[in-house]
Image (cartoon, rainbow, N blue to C red; front, side, top):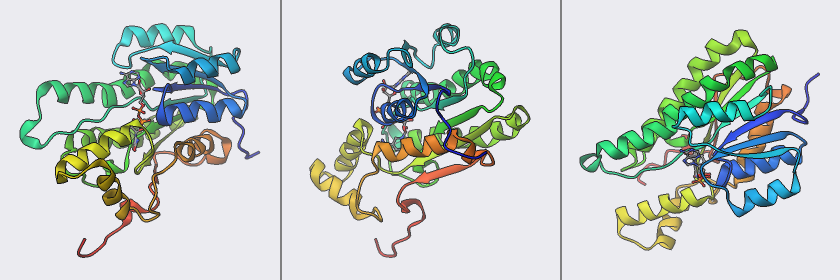
Length: 261
Ligand code: NAD
C-alpha cells in the first residue's frame, strides 16, 4: 500500500526551532506524527508547539557536535525512530584568503560531523523501525558555485555525498537516505545570504534581494512549507524506492544558464 502515511511515525528533526526545521516539525505534527526537536535554542514557536501538541512534540536541548548530548537525547526520545531529518546547519561567508581555522572547523563540525554523529547514534533505532528514513538538508550550493561561500558549499557537497554512500550501506536495513537541496529559502539564513551578496556588490539589502531574484526562474524565494512537504513525501511509503538522491527545490535555478548574465 503506497500512501502519504506519516501518521504516528516517530520523527527526529535537528535544528527544528526556526526556519526550515520549524516548518518540518509543524508539517509532521499536523499529519499526526510524533516529533522530537533537537536544537540549541527553544524559541517562542517551539513553546507554542509544546503547548499545542503536549503528547506528540518534544524539545531536547542538543548541540549536534556534542556526542554526549546526542547519546543522552537518544535515550530520552522515542524507542523507535522512523524518520531522521538532519536539518541543523550554519552558513559562513569568507573569501579564500580570509578563511581561518576557527571558521573552517566550526562549519564542518556542525554541518558535516554533526550530521554523521546524529545519524550514527540513531542508527539502531532506525534499524528497529524496519522502514527508516534519513533526510539530510543539503543545498543547491552543493552543485553550483556561490562566490565567497566555498566553506558552506563544500560542507553541503559533503552532506550530499554522505547521503549517496549511506543509501547504499543502509539499503539492507530497509532505510532510505536522501538529500534535499533548497535554493533561496525564506529564512533567517536567507537574510545572512542577502547581506553577503549586498556586501560583495556594495549595494543595499533590498537591491541585493532584487539582484538575487533576477536570477531565480520563478522570481520568488522558496517557502519553508514547500521544503517540509517534500520531507513528508520522502518519509512516506510513496518514496520507498527513492534513495541516494538529491531533490533540488530551487524553481529550476540550478539548471539555469543565462548567456551574458
Ligand atoms: P536557520 O538558521 O533558520 O535554522 C537553523 C536551526 O539550526 C536553528 O534553529 C539553530 O538553532 C539550529 N542549530 C544551529 N546550530 C546547531 C547545533 N550545533 N546543534 C543543534 N541545532 C543547531 O536555518 P534555515 O535557513 O532554516 O536552514 C536549515 C537547513 O537548511 C540548514 O542546514 C541550511 O544549510 C539548509 N539550507 C537553507 C537554505 C536557505 O536558503 N535558508 C537553502 C539551502 C539549504
